[in-house]
Amino acid sequence: KQWYQRRVRVMQLKRSRLKERRLEFLEVKEAYEKIVEECEHFGLTPPPSDSIDLLDSQLTEHEKMWALYEEYSSELKKLVQEDWVSFRGSLHQLEDLMISWSERVRNEIKAQGEPTPMIVKI
Image 1: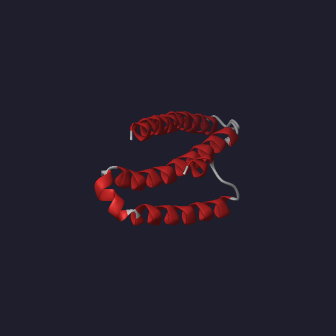
Image 2 (image 1 turned 90 degrees about the vertical axis):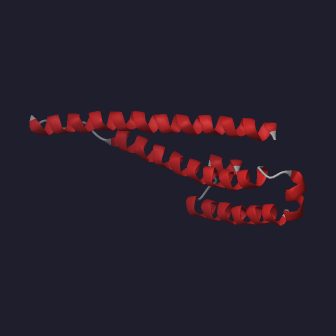
Image 3 (image 1 turned 60 degrees about the vertical axis):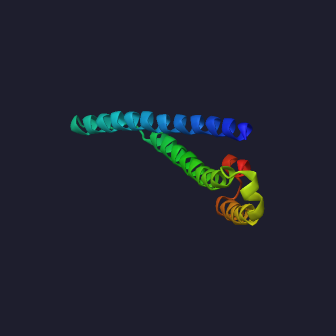
């Protein structure tokens, strides 16, 4: 159980870093939009948005991956919180969880064409 708790803390730390990066990105995007407005105001050609768009799509992709992992983790956490004596009588819950998530992972791989790091982790 200690290993699981440490793992959860590390994963939460990584997720919080992603949230920080999103906030930083929003600041950069706002600055970019102000520059575009100023360029339009002065009749200048605005800078290309390729980098902004790429970063936004990458952040969104990572957020989706983490959302999937967090959903899996929260469902698993419900089972982990039970003590063994009461849980051993309902092992079918763990089996049901694994079956439903294996199906979900297969569908995600089909949709994306290849497994993401979070799918591999699951």
